[in-house]
Length: 455
Ligand code: GDP
Image (cartoon, rainbow, N blue to C red; front, side, top):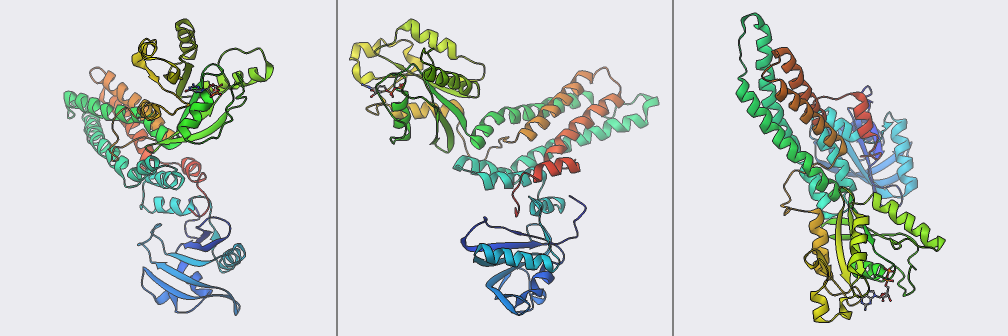
């Protein structure tokens, strides 16, 4: 992937298919020369950076399209190479013909993510910022866009760089001790090192903990609405989504299948899976539903457990809640059909402080429930500029850093400088993997191959 750096690459930068315009992007030393060879208009090789030129794309005198060409002269471009963007009419035929022509004139079709890979290799972005580009493109909610933007702007990178710099200082002092090992000197003050490792691990610990929320923001929170048949799950789903999607019926157990809908609360996507009842059923179709419910619950972060406040007994309620409990899963208990209760019954609802009383049918207290759903995922107020880890690769690297630093801490008082140096270097290595200070071709391939072509 990294060997073909000299070549000029070309790809469609806009989505495949018909559009008002389509943008073809070229990047590489010869980008301007190649574009110029098919362009009828001004001599592009003589134009300054950041200018736009009207003209025609011609293939042996045959005009293919009327276009606008934007020029970005190295290093003032996304990839830091010469970049040309050709805005064409968005016909699939025109776009394909022009790309083919550019390939004939010496460009090569770009691999997935190759523009961004070049931006990384040329120092325009670090690795975590390059990954943020992919996240930003994939962002499907305000919160996921904000988190990706923060990472793209370098918030995460700067934080890691500060940690790395401190550790590097100590690593070099410890290494210096190795040169004087005969003389039993200590250049790296052990108490300061201890403090540094503790401080670093505190920051790393909070980054690791931010993953739960970061992941929720990026991928959404799998949410199951569970409850006995006829508790009002479908009605609640509709009330939450504010439209009549699932089929509501008063025959117990008629919601046969799981229906996935997305509820967006203040920028967080909750992927709502409506399910059959959780109670064991005799009917086989229903049982399939129950089994699916259980499978869904296994991959769930949040369970909204709905019960019929009129029908259920305290024992049944406790049994249900107990059967749903799982490590790492939040259960929100919701008492439904409170429109059928009088004041006294309402006050005597079991476990009332942990239960949200609603009427799904009359859309009573739905906003309160939404607020509880939101705060189950977002425990603290989001300011928009916090650094959240959203990438599993980063999470794993942070965990390995934390482990290496724990070894430093354990060994500080009784191992020799050379062992200490090894553990500090390990920690530095894992931190460096996140921003790409340390990379391998495999790692880069793995990251950039997940991008789309043209990015
Ligand atoms: P599910 O089997 O849990 O999905 O339950 P449904 O949503 O199909 O509701 C079962 C029955 O309870 C339907 O007849 C609903 O109209 C009724 N129902 C649901 N929510 C309420 C409510 O808040 N109040 C009243 N009175 N009836 C409700």
